[in-house]
Length: 261
Image 1 (cartoon, rainbow, N blue to C red):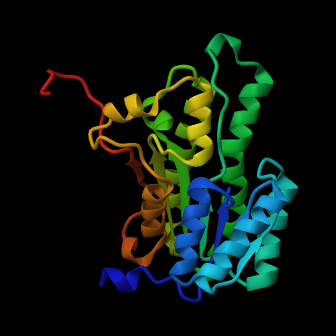
Image 2 (image 1 turned 90 degrees about the horizontal axis):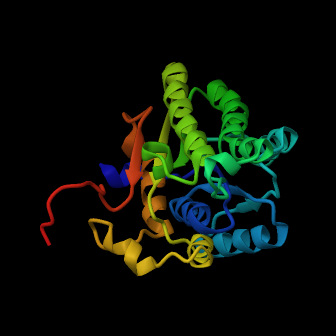
């Protein structure tokens, strides 16, 4: 039954970018379903507060580990701390990411590299480190977070689009190589998800949220929980025969054609 497959009792999950937005919503859901969760981000105070809320609400232990996912040593330390505290890793959610938009001709080399470090290299580092433990266990589920930019591209985000497309292919190859160890890897591509920070960024950029919603077939912006629902499903036994896929959570396709309005 699907409800039985959604239990995470006895399992340990790492969620990067877990203090806010999609990461926080995902960690919260995993804890509610019985997982012990390790969350990381760079801001220690914010991270500790999030872990305390998740633990109090779920009754499960939620461990906060301040981590810069662009730093290889920090990623290795995060996995080592998780194993020291809990002895295993069953779920890895590579959620940390982001970008600064700009025209292609104005993107500096360091800016390009930084976006790949945050969105792509961090995913590789943590998958590699957590994956070694999952291989030893002969089980595990990895969910990487991409974006509609990685599926369709976005003008003003050549670096971000390329980095997220790379995450999607990395996910597919991970699934192909590690399936024999009982490890699944999938990717979720986010559409217009109005987390608090993203909504603020849209406002600063002069984007009208109401107008953005009109372009979405379902007529609304997404929420962090919309993303978390899919992430948790893909990490669960209910998705036991799904691996190597990228699934969009976007409210429907934006396509051309005649006006049916």
